[in-house]
Amino acid sequence: MDLRNKVAIITGGTHGIGAATALSLAEQGASIALVARNAGDGAVSKRIEALGIPCITVTADLSKEEECTRAVNEVQVHYGSIDIIVHSAGSAAPGSLLNGAREVWYQAFDIHVHAVFHLCRAAVPYMKKNKEGAIVLIGSAAGLRGVKNALAYAVVKGAIPQFCRALAFELSPDNITVNCVSPGVIRTRFQDFLTPEQVKNNINNRIPLQREGTPEDVASVICTLVKNRFITGENIVIDGGMTMRIA
Image 1 (spheres, rainbow, N blue to C red):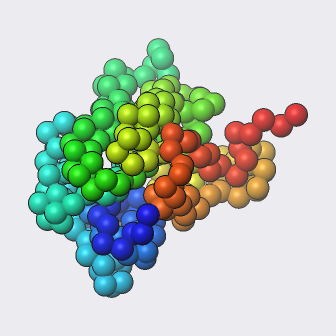
Image 2 (tube, rainbow, N blue to C red; image 1 turned 60 degrees about the horizontal axis):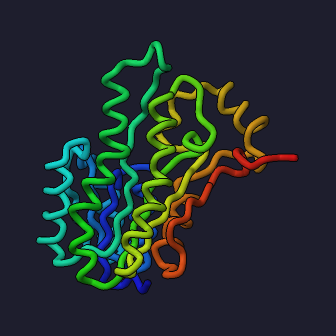
């Protein structure tokens, strides 16, 4: 896909993986709509506009269906088109089966699973009119192997690749690709709760490449999936080898 004059919605686009993806797509010519709960300091939009690329920021609580629909419609009205969706918005969901709060469980589904459904349901009719499109969802290595004391997070992230595969079949006649990336340990504010000892353990004992990933490591793969028109229904793991099986 030639990204010039294309319109990309990036949820969670004001920080971390979402911000890196928005900048990468903008560098290749795509107009950007950042969708986030808070507009933040506008640093990402300013960097995009400095490239001569249009960028708007839409504030929305994506855990609510009506907010997902409103955000998509606002982008469509502003740009007159939607070609790309990258759902990077998310939140931690700590807690075990017996000690986790019920509210955390339901909130995890709202922001990680239900938001994907509502965003795609609102945007796909617009994308179909363009006879081409790309959707990239963010899973997690936690959804592939599980993670201690974060049951809800592991479950919802495990659901994302299956949603991707099912939707890829559904949208293939419309030339809309649907793919997923599953990052491992990526150095974003999402990892700020880790102690120096935990960071050291990750690097020395869990990640064969001996470093944490960066948002740009993930963004480069997302951009490839957006541009390539013959990859769909795939889940690309970006974790420095953390989840590979070693004989």
